[in-house]
Length: 171
Image (cartoon, rainbow, N blue to C red; front, side, top):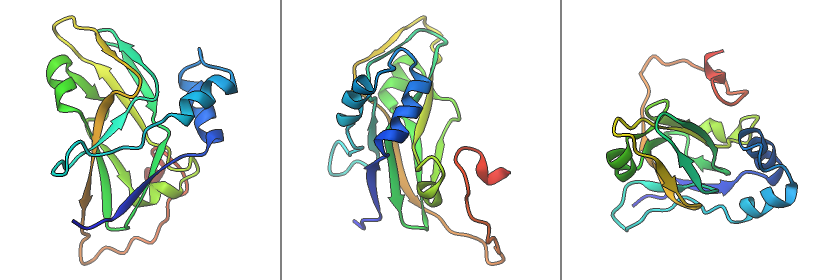
């Protein structure tokens, strides 16, 4: 198996700003530092798993119809001809209809160098039609990412470089 990427944490300063914006109930640097220090890196569950499990930095309860934007605290550096595709974990999707709001997350190789340090956010919704509440403890694997190689067309002449985070490539 070819090794093409490496996971890292974003800086504490980046995580602190993003986390307190998403979870205003956590405001002290000490509280958020403890969360940051214990962020697990994505990992595969078995040697034949394609997906890297991505973990919640804190416990989370989502009632039916509720949405949460999760600052994962991670970024990924990968070869230029790869993309990191993020999907819901099949068990949570099957049991609770836990879904990613953008269906599939696409992390491009140049996102690593963006102005937000390539901080991966994952927005999820409990889309149950069975009135089920999803309760997940901290460090629960709630999504998974798969590295995929891609190609470009013969006549592709793009020279533009990324200069921002979310939505910056369409500006």
